[in-house]
Length: 116
Image: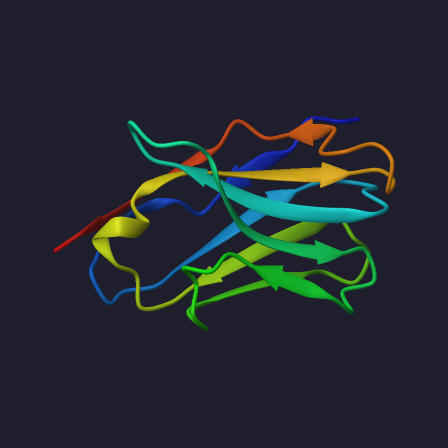
């Protein structure tokens, strides 16, 4: 599939907000966000199906993050509120073309840094 391109990362103070975006033309099954901090394994953050009718989140989110997409499936976004220093990581988006494909397309990632 076409390369995914993330944007919206940056540096914020604790309690601030960021919205990440991922251009992902033509994804047909699901899209998700993952993150990885130095010395830690990659973590699942959020997932959304192609219709936008179902979402799921990692346990750490606790209502702070929202995943959403645009109507034509070109982009997926992650609204992050009340950011904490432990949210600091590289955030990557991924898409799945079918229920059998797994996460078959990945972006390069965007850095999110939260200072205290």
